[in-house]
Image (cartoon, rainbow over all chains, first blue to last red; front, side):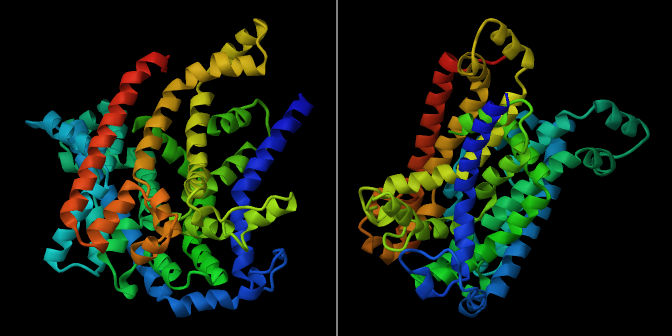
Length: 270
Length: 215
């Protein structure tokens, strides 16, 4: 038994190394000078040139872009949690004419590839005069058919007796939604929040298209622009990409059990 | 590949499962733009780490993403690298739902680890495999971020000889809609994409009756 596990560990360790080496190399390169990064053969020991990180702030309005990304992520996540849970509650518990038909339409939207919405949404933003604004980043992401579907499945799994008891006590649907359903749905809400954070922070296409002023960009679009200009300054590019991806990696490491549960939850129901 | 790793992780009494799972999952949560930049550097023909490692065993590596004959495979490898952890987690959850008794019964019947994997794990895991294959097809058809950063866009894409080999549907859509401003053409591209996804998904659902077993 012990020897068989040794073989398993060896294979897994090689796999894990393949996952981690790119990150390690990214970090080592980010603290090298350009001339030492392009040495052949490559040098393992860097020259600890932390000023590459400072360069990122000089070349990009990194602080602005960081703030934009944080606000976009928070705004979208708050919106998704509120609006999707309201719609999901209605679909799971309220009776109204056309409920199944409307829900069917929602489901069919899930099948549509997101790029299909880009042109119409872009035109709407342009007409509203919202190009290069924070609301252009947030508003189209406040709501999603996916979030409604995920939470509806979750609400359907909750015992009906609780909200019936609340109704007999005279609670309004809004009150049942807020005081009974939402507290019970915490794991589902957490899963949706995690998926929205991940999707928003890493989103490229939409931010790239709507916000073209460097000060209004998000980190992913800013980073792509940085690469477009400084194709070969790899140490600075590595420093920038590490800085931009670190916040979500940190959240993942702290909350990894919830991350993985949330993603399996959506996987098994999606 | 993800199935094999999941099977290894699913072994009884294996220590450190959560550490491995975390490490394999790391690329899934990393910003794709950052991932693409790191791989562009690793793939670099002259100074890249990959070609250096290859040179140690006497192989003169190609320019990977700048070489039309290797660019597509190089891109696909990054795609696998970033999605492995996600698929792994789905498979692992599916495997943990398979009752231990099945394996014990198979072992009594004389099945070794490989036969157990083939006769017990794979059939019972088929719903998860089906889900992952549907999701992967849809995801690959919509790949954009990696191509945008690795291949370039606009003029730099036009200057890149390997670009036609790695341009995806959504990258073409971006180019038409926001670089050459041919919105009508771009809209037609995404409608075709929608059609393609619907057809491929329908085919997969049709074929699933032949190989997917629902317990």
